Image (tube, rainbow, N blue to C red; front, top):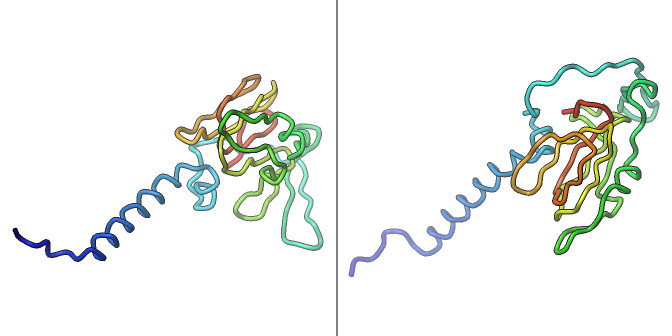
Length: 161
C-alpha cells in the first residue's frame, strides 16, 4: 500500500483553510458584512436628507427628518419580535440604531444583529431586508416573517445600505 505524501497535520490544515474560505464567502451574503465592506445590497435611490445634526462628543452624524421619515427605535422593533421553537431570543441587545460604515446614524432605521432565528411581525409602512439564515430578501409590511436571523428595517419603502 502506497503512503500519502501529505501528513495528517497537513490534511487538517488544508481542511481548516477550506472551511474558513467557505465561511467567509457565506458571510459576505450577510447584510452587516456587506455593509462593512461597502458591497451594498444593489442599486437604491438616494435618501431624502432634510436635516443634518452632529453630536459634539463624537464624529457621529445623524441624518433624517422626523417629519418625512419618522423616528424608529430599537425598542419599537423589538416589540415586533417573537421567539420560535428552537430559535433565538428577542433580547434588546440584538437591536441597535442603524449605523453606516462611515459613522452616520439613521434615526428611521434599525439593525437586528445576527443570531438564531426569531419571528418578526413587520407592520404596514415599513420595509426590511431580512436574512433567514439561508436567503436574503427585501420585504414590505404588513408581513409575518417566521424565521429571521438578521434584519435591517426602516420606515417607508427604502432599506438603507
